[in-house]
Image 1 (cartoon, rainbow over the protein chains, first blue to last red):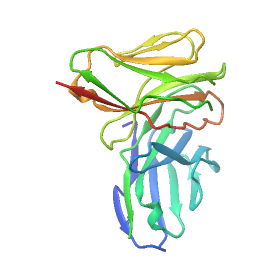
Image 2 (cartoon, rainbow over the protein chains, first blue to last red):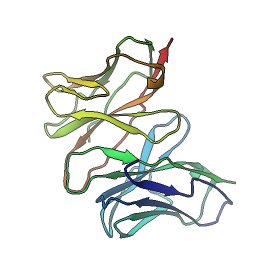
Image 3 (cartoon, rainbow over the protein chains, first blue to last red):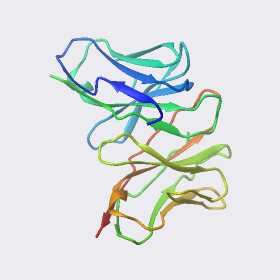
Image 4 (tube, each protein chain N blue to C red):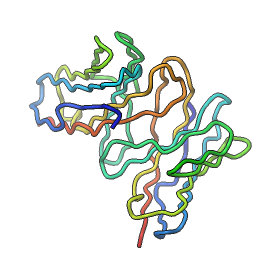
Length: 114
Length: 112
């Protein structure tokens, strides 16, 4: 699993509440990514990070913010959760100092907004 | 990053080779072809990647055409556990990590 831990693994929350998902890695990788996956869709990139405090938007970033204050943690925040954000969220990492390497994915967080 | 086109679904008999095609006609010279698979709602798993030459590892082989506009992932002896969605992705190798953009993928069903 390349030392990736997502937490929580499952969460049910109410519309309008803030939610933070955590991706933690133990191997000092530089690049980290957040994706969401919905039925009938492939994975869609939300945000990614290429270093501490260095982040950029992906395909579907509206309604999401991220933070990376230390190498090992990449946080995804839904400021005010909506039902359309019900999804499975995957975190991924890519090796540091390597521009051409594969990504490793976490096991996912299933978020339900009611 | 260049877009890819894959068939929506494919079947393969157990023990036979599974050949999964991918079209990436707008690929640039510095873009790599990556293949991942996702088994029933687990996190995607890396399979193989290449730039120009054919590649082989313990999981699969990757055949890239000479003009690089298409590629084929080959699972030489498919098993039931290879049933999954297979994603073909092209991306630039850059210093900011690049955006790994997934398409719809091919749903491969390996049948007994």
